[in-house]
Image (cartoon, rainbow, N blue to C red; front, side, top):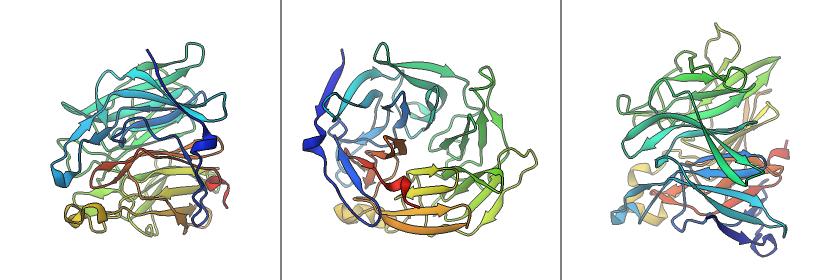
Length: 348
């Protein structure tokens, strides 16, 4: 039995204008405790949100992390608004994996489960005929891994960074799965990253006729990183090239690239006040700035601010804009809010 939560956009819309971003408030995520660390992506024009986690109360009050296995779909309705639909469960509870949108559906990779890090990989697809979400298993990762990042480039899924029990401070993994052109293929190891890390900023951008993997920030041990690198994706002998540092650290920041030329980094944890977050309680906030990186000029620009800083969610291209669903607000508290940035990716 499906649960449907409907909100008419006429009553729910709220424009919040700050800098150059113009987000529209969509219906809140249905779980009253919010969500972060979920698999997110778009399949057949609906948004799929699966797994994730939340805390039952603030960390300073002894709150504990609770993993989730719910599958939700966000879609437009006949009234011109949007609705959330409950679509069943994943095979296990999982959070802080990676996910990316492909033409076939949302690929979900790794994550943290009740029994440790996962090496599971699967595809979630919205079946437009049966109005349900289908799950298809894909080749497993070379190693169990959580807090990794994923993108799709030229039909290939690329994941980088992460951590597991054997590498708690970060991993230097860089793996690729060409499942669209080679359905029976396994993951390829493309070589090590410049250094071990997790929660990295990752994008595929093009310059001078070459496609590059752009990698930056993240965390190694207790160090919040600002270094930035690029590496040719299609050159077997390609090496990592160090670029100018990012303006700030952006651990597990929602990131999106447009036209292969521009990358947007929305919020993320910069490590400021991180050691004092529990004593600061509600006064602790994550970075709210929106960063824009132009690959043609290798320059960063601050283009605006978020209504509130978030981490552990994704920036999804959807409905001509960029969608943010939930996320961690700091001190482990989760957000229920859903924002659609209608003009963000058109700003040049």
